[in-house]
Image (tube, rainbow, N blue to C red; front, side):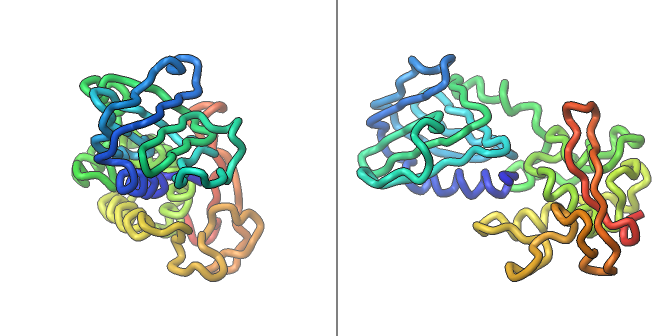
Length: 258
């Protein structure tokens, strides 16, 4: 599941391949931007901001969000694509590489000067140069009655965390996702753990929060009914969200988390 570490790694790989090169083809396959052609423009850089990917080309930025199923692939010219062509939402070529964005949840083009209009609302980026733990804590505690499981998913609080990290962080700190944020003991430790976990995974193809890539890589996420890796109690699953449309699967151990 794409989270901030996935997007960070994607941006790093794309940047290494195409930054400093000139686009020879620009094919954006979404109606609103299908006529945009940045061919002939220099790719300045590719970077991530939370779970958003920003490709700065000429005076414009191609903004994409992977959502649940999106991904960017890099191919050498003439290499067979690994996913169906009909799922491609953007195809960018340089003299050496073909970058293909598949099943992207969001694709749009904005003037680079207007970039903040699409990502300016984000909180401190756990993997970004603007990381500010104190500001993250301030935002997290701004609504002390809000369940901590919702605060952790709010990109306005911390940019980069998704559902996997939310569930794993709550388990590792022994906190029920429904506990009010204001009742979390020393939220600085929770934020520090989020920073540590996502940094430990930012260069891994396979994410792990248990410290191993053999066996279970998650403590609770996706493990409904299976025994807790610490105490053996069956893991439970529920839904948590501000509204029904925003509900996400929540996993927890009823013994290890209170």
